[in-house]
Length: 355
Image 1 (spheres, rainbow, N blue to C red):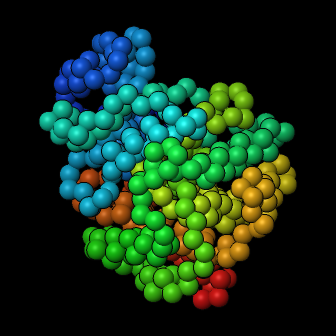
Image 2: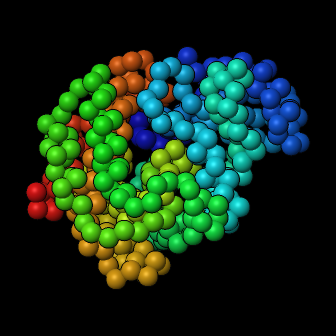
């Protein structure tokens, strides 16, 4: 069976139903992207589930295009204009986000909204055990991921022009409400007992405390580009779920890797971390706390239960798109099938938190 690295790496032919008028795109880029010069070649990245992503090759420079998928979309989903805005602001603030070149909100160009950014050369690592990294180097790669998310959470949203990028306060209540509604409204993908329990339990057990930072929403190793040979994060990708929110929601989502099995988005449960020279959950959490000035993190079981529920709701949405025939990835069917086991795992975290 092919690994996630093999399934998701590289580019291929543009998939059926996701093509567009490439000549029309080239015209738009000539008019809107500084120093653009064709001819233009378009290929599609193999990875990713939600917004179709393409590599644009020209003689002088390579670009990446992210677009809304075609077809009927849920309200507020696939907001490439928000992706474009946050990436542009973070790049200007010195955070490792790609340089952007332009946003198009004219459906007549390629059929849906899209934006164009720099194609950052480096490594995308799809397996959380970092199997292709020498054992002695793995702690440095984990530390680079840790430092980068801490850097994001320490930025002042107002100072970098993102003060209105999300609603202030009540982040967990609003997010639980959003993903509960999306789960309940997408009847095509079915209902799951553990999800129904979580919809009821989560809003009544939110820990106290309000904090606000820019949050990525899907921060994990395969959503970043590492330096080709060094433990350095060159770019964080896939900002579709970013907003202003609670930094501990964002960090605990990243930390889920320690509480999920390898069969679920390359988790680390059951893996011999010491043998692989990978820091454990406690050490990784302590490093983040040190960088962000925290004295530990209480209520982690709730935060992880919330994030597993949220991810299960996202996979539920993917399953709905599979049923409707609008899924962007060839691997979407397998991801959609992950709703039930992930929801059960989320409920296990809720039980640890006292449910």
